[in-house]
Amino acid sequence: MEKAIATEIPVNTCACGTCHEPVGRKAMYRPGHDARHVSVLLQGLINEHADGRKVTKALVAAEAKHLPSERLRAKFTRAAERLAAKQSEADTKAAAK
Image (cartoon, rainbow, N blue to C red; front, side):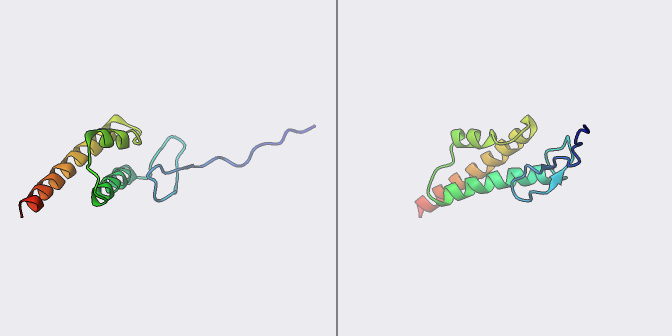
């Protein structure tokens, strides 16, 4: 009796969360899509602020856990801190008016 040979190779998809394109066997992202993943998470923080919620370090840390590498987590954290500082400055200016 002959064994059936699997001819279909499973395809990994990009982890950016938006494109769902295939990537190589060892890759997690399409080229440049690691930055896109960071941007998607930052947009989530912007939406939180727009809904009236404060962007806290705990929220940033929780969102950073979605990123696969320490380098991307650091990039996201720096960008989130800049975003929080801008939002805090804007909130302070709005309260002073």
